[in-house]
Image (tube, rainbow, N blue to C red; front, side):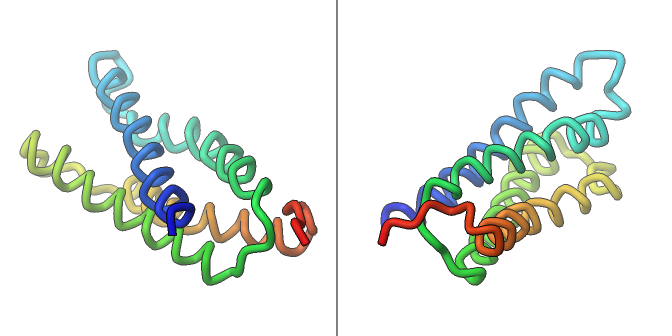
Length: 127
């Protein structure tokens, strides 16, 4: 039970926290109006690579496991964004296309990695 918690909550919160800190840093730059798009194009490949690295070391996992992980990551992102951005900063203009795309990617990245690992046989087999 410990590993699924690391996969869902551990990585989900870590990815959100990295983005949150980067967003706070970018907020005080001249790129303030493009934070979402900059982070989307910067952190999507990083998130994909870390996710692939994390799960390739594990044995074969079901697509349902990866989908559950994706649902957890998306829910974590929505909840923490709402609590620590929308509510804390009283942001009325936070939700835009880049944010909805980010939530979608937080679901799709683990699912895509899972599909790739399961089809390519890249996951280490421990049998």
